[in-house]
Image 1 (tube, one colour):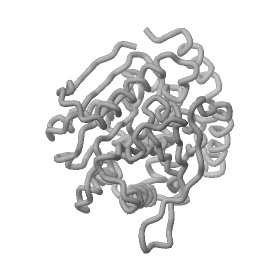
Image 2 (cartoon, rainbow, N blue to C red):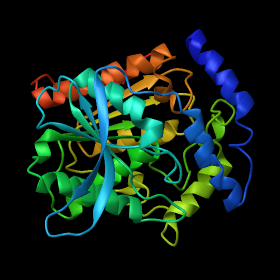
Image 3 (cartoon, rainbow, N blue to C red):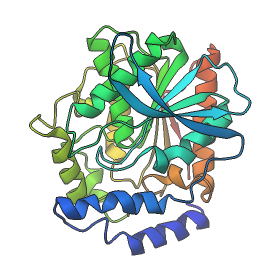
Image 4 (tube, one colour):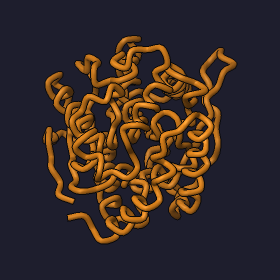
Length: 322
């Protein structure tokens, strides 16, 4: 059963999500961005880490991608990097909204995290976000980072972007990272999962109208089942190990389950962790919800295990009761 703290937050979100769930035109949609920024205003970095804005650049290229470097006071092995892509349906969210979550990961692992401020739709539809993700990854390689010392992570749309990036890296024959971490990933913008309908009354931060709107804004003229738009339809063969976390009451539950199944079929070393009864983006409430702290601890453990290259075989599926 979800904790009482989670249920209290869920009730508040259900009561205040009317604005987020309004059908709207673009001007109304644009109000969602500042609302989300205000809602995460007090999500401060934990003690023991700090951040600075950086510009990721490639050799012999005048372009750059803005990001935040989140740095532990006592880093462990500064050559190892967490490259993080925030969620928000490719249209909202920012480094500010996710700084506290990524800061917690940085503190727990002792690793530097790079939180990328990729371009968002509708101003910058596909492939802008993927281009920025690829650029950021290549910039780290140009700085001398080794692919085996990078873990790609993301939540929601950022989780989908992490998988799309790895598919793109494979296509371009660029060295793949050590692993990927997907928190409630949005990998099917065509919205064919059953949980989109069955869980619609349990997930206050997501609804089908907004999912369809965001998908259209991001995909532009591209087919929603383009593997680089919706990586659920990609060939996952040869991808590095993958951790997926999700709750069984999220609208994106089936996205995560089908991604795990497809990865397993492609012989990817995939670890699936399922919580019960939690809302989408529960990780963002890590200062208030014990399940968020538990999930982040497990991500940190996975990161450390991956970088330490422990020989133990991971379980492909691990169910966790929330």
